[in-house]
Length: 185
Image (cartoon, helix red, strand yellow):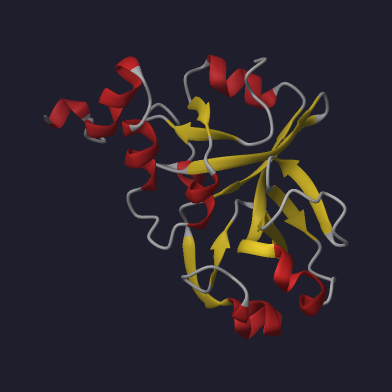
């Protein structure tokens, strides 16, 4: 579990039984002794950000829609930003890893607009209590792999699951071509 940290990706394995996470890629935002929090990167909704959060709709990466971050607190919004520079002291931004940060959506857009290279807003999040994620990984429900900033902000997420697996070394890359039900192969 030492490699499970903020900025890593959880890639759902076929063994994961929860339909909320079938073929998902989750960006971990916070990992500590109390649990873990992340957002699903490949579940766009049809709801435009501008319809819900007004001026943020002009700042978000395409597609300019909310993404379903997970099954927890889906009536709330969480924003992941890519900072333009290395300054970690920008008002409204809290560093996650490297240039990825969480953005406080109560911050006026004009204070952070020039500081952003990318922004994605998620309705809800994915959360695990103490020891829960570790257990799911041991059961074979998740592959834990390094994340890249472009994974968060790509405009077409339909192949994200396969693309993340495909770039992994060794046998893990072969899983990107496995059918959902290997028995039908």
